[in-house]
Image (cartoon, rainbow over all chains, first blue to last red; front, side):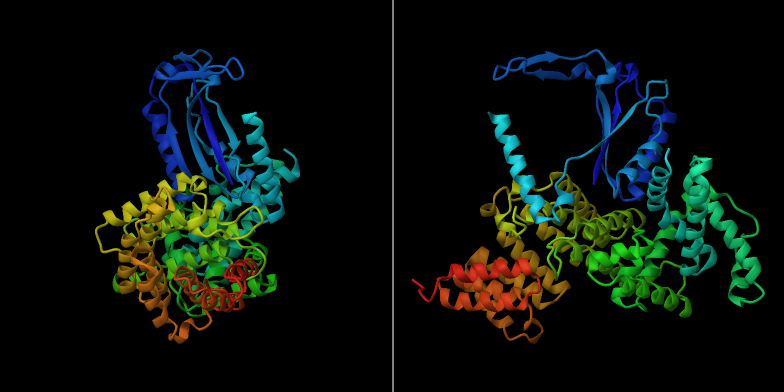
Length: 144
Length: 421
């Protein structure tokens, strides 16, 4: 199963302040551990929201509204992510706990989220069929 | 944290640490069975202590220190009786507990590599290699392994016990082979990993078409190996092959659980992340600058499919050429059969069927269901439905996989009853 470790943005990351050499090294070492354990799938850091945009749909069926960055509320934004493939939720938690404090100024926050997959279900044809029907319904609902 | 929560956390820690632990301990005690016992002892102590005392900051180092203390006690107690351990004790710094971090960080990659060369040693049978590797390097239980291979748990347990005994009796050294030997031994290791992967990817018997646990373990082990043996092009080739094949994992069965052939799969659902990883691994293999080996070539073939946005855009001449190269480095009737398919796609079924007809005479393919299946396919394309129907029926009678059987019988039915117009 796949999990995404989402590193939240902070006032520093939003201000474009790069991590210290120490933090950078710690993160590097951690990533190497993930690679050596064969669990790392992808990891990226994001630039601050100042060159990002936000697209929203304030009215159902209406036109999108575009807003230029930077955005306020750093905690609502993400600064990077690490995608891992593990055998259990506990293993994912263990890896997430081993990630160094991404910011080190009391603002560090990591969110761990499981990636949606049909994988666990592929062994069971009946469940798989249900899943497919469900997905189709969701899609139709979205279109409706 | 509740007791069961702590136990689940310890399970997870064990999964992350066990292979490193066993590898490090094997270097110290030179006996893989004993190393595993010592690691387990440490786990048992952790299960007793951690729920009350809390999980230590560096659980891996804690387990290693605990296991090493047990090793030292054991060696002291048995050294008079067992000459082998006296030698070990002399040659290690066991009497001074060395810096655990160094054991865990410094040499751990080397130790893991030595361990995998040991569990995949040619003195063991193929089955034993696979079972022991899954046990020691992937940390799977005998029960998990037995479920993946559809054999009794006791059979697997015995297989593992016997394998460890054989390694010990034959004094198999804990080392990475050198020079000429390295290539042969490495190909044995890769074979074990790919066998695991294939067993999971296309189960050869039973209800389930796919047993994902094995695929994922093989893939993980391959990724680890790509780190610790990064100079070996075929390691990257194998990883590339597995990543790319696994990218199609979800599209290999339809909603009824029936297999879907490569050309009929929904390409939009192929896992782009794994494809990208696979292509990058293939590139690493190429960059090492040696001529492509069997795994890299198979990965390159697989890559051709991922690079075609639609089945019609598949570069069949290139695939046929790659199969030709593969048939030189790895001559086999099965490769020939695949080459025949590629050639018929590139240059027409009438040319492909000539190769297939030649293969019909090969005794090693007599029971191989894909030969009549491919032949049937080509006959359909040539409009020879009566012959095709016979081939599909023959193919169905040769496969043990129930879902595949259904698929083949359906194809036979599609050929109609005796009307070939």
